[in-house]
Image 1 (tube, helix red, strand yellow):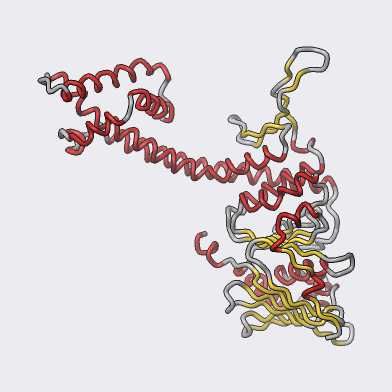
Image 2: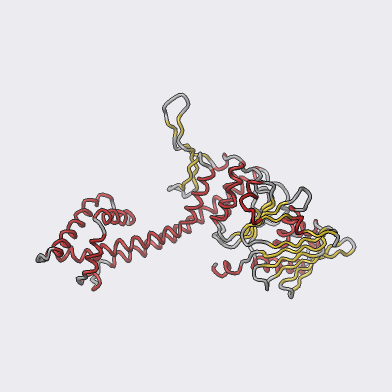
Length: 435
């Protein structure tokens, strides 16, 4: 997986030559956010469609747009993807050229001959898509488009409510699987933590030899902090909270021995045992801190995901069911009208969310499941179905969940464009006519 993460790239430059036979586009792109603006009819949607179609080898879309050539220059400038379109009678031919060396040619007509598709066409298409998949990850930001990750098809077709619900159910299942995988990693860390804890039972010269430095370290921690840390350790180990009195006695015994040392009093045999426990207790607390940090780092993406959902949908509470592991959505406690009764723990189903809430849940879940791999997000008017306040936040939320994403968004929303003024490209300014 690490190797795949390194190899995936973003787009540095887009060249489209003789689009519709009358204009060419020469557009540099930022590695993070690109806001494409322009008047209606300026070609923003076509620009996005071409990028997606080239990256997915989407034959119906490539065939629906007239152009001479498209070149995508990737971050590693040695990697380029070029598509040349030529016509021959009623046939459109396409040639994919990778890195200016490897060429693959096919005809659009071959894709329409069901049952008569040549082996050459199948192999060529498979090879091209494998090359593309090795170079980039790409997805549509809007749920109003078919996501290339889900299936290859006519992404221009609108998605009906049943399809949105179906996609939502699938993503919720993938989210469950993802969390179970993270929980498995956390459980392995817990096992490692337990092994280190139990190893403290064994004789170790580091713990069982008097060390003035450890005594000073113990003194630097007040007993309340030590007590709190030990409560946390015992809770992590699943040990009952009834051990509170034992923990207090444990700390008192150590404190008494340390005080004798400070007062230069003679130690008895009974003082020797608490003295050795000082070092072990400090090590136990350090082990707990180390593994708490490691576990939090593993679960951090999910924690951020819940935080993002909570910031967008402030009237709801998001958590994961301890019983099923599924994402649970509840209404925030409300006061029943005309009474003092507080209604709480009212759970709602994912399918009961509004269209905007469903879209938001899909976008953020999909972004989380990318696991911070470099992704190219293509967004055609992502503001559709989103509240104005959400439009203001959506790109930042996506970048929070996946810092390695490259967003290429065409929008009419000042709420979105205003956040990225230095990242705005007016398509008309990078378009040359009559070439």
